[in-house]
Image (cartoon, rainbow, N blue to C red; front, side, top):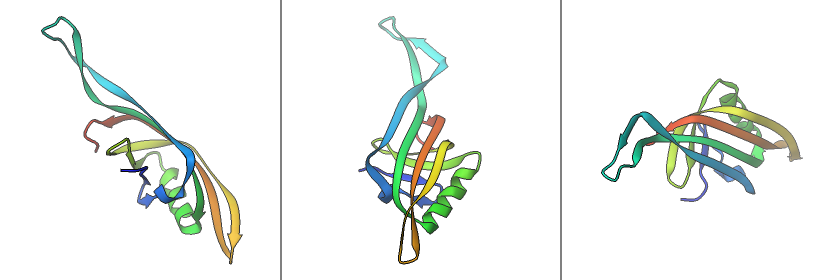
Length: 126
């Protein structure tokens, strides 16, 4: 599976600018479920992930820009992403900007900067 990013109901994968996409994933553990294994080591169960996604989107058409803007204007939005398998979680928008890139035959095309953060995405997704 290649790079996949869906924000709300909009698949923005086709807009991702080459080399302008990053994802940072770190494990979240259940401290209450800590136990000592047969070797005497403390073990905690991994319950999910903390995730940060940053992407630059190019040539975003008017309709997709409006849908994306609406999805990111709420407190949280559903995001599906590949890392490397598909996961889905509730993310907060930590940064979003749209700038007009060009107008071609009366149609506007935008460049978007998107930063998303999820403090917890369950191990098995939503």
